[in-house]
Image (cartoon, rainbow, N blue to C red):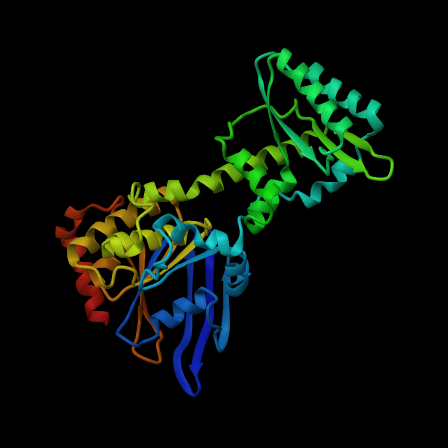
Length: 397
């Protein structure tokens, strides 16, 4: 398995005080790593450097092929702090969605701009005859009783009476044939996804999308209509795009948009907060707030999750329960997790490897493999091997 995190010769000074000294390690994709060490040795400082929140004085960190700062910008990294830091004036769902509202809803997999050449290479139909030809061509390919998505790309002057009448006639033909169509604008939806609600039209387009967009729906038999309104001539200019590559890209756009829109609900279920989405943070227990913070850390779908003692302030029973829930989430999502903790038993129970830092200036004393079987169970805490690993780490510290 390849490494997703590479830490090379990291040093960190605060003024003249050396905090981290020559830190080197790699983390494999999907691995669970814990960092332990005495109080004040620099564990959180190291995590903050990994997360791109502060810079190292010397050395290099690569996450998924990028610097830690770039990885943060590209949403490769999620960060969960010691305290949940939930905004009291927002409910739990709004707190979880907050990163989406701040940075926008990005769909990484779809290079729409790169497909512009596909649009330009297609045939143009000018005027009313052209638009009629394009729509008639599409109607002929549709089958009775099937459901389609109409990708209407470009500016359409629905306020023009002739245009309005044309679409009315077209929809009558479509209804007569028993064909269902959801007319959506990719540009509008993409604008909403990237930047949040910006205009009334974006909201309308996105609300249309949110009406339980059906998976596997036909897209005009892999055809896309591009309509541009000629303001001077007051006629439509139409392209009928037959590129399967382009149609597939738009299909993926809407499917991913649907997934992103429903992600908060999925995460609420994942962290067992379904039914509490409208509660305010002060109505939840500390454990529930920690779960909400975890869901917020996952909302941008990062490859790497950095956790700075997220269960520190919780009682032992709640902490143990959340450890099990965290393992369940890790097993489902296969995220790479780097956890800072003061608890040696927690580090042993959760991790594939444990990185032990010395006292300040921190060096790596040892990286210990935790060769306990997975999935981890509570009864494992009574095993001889588990107890031996805890004792081994205590001796190193």
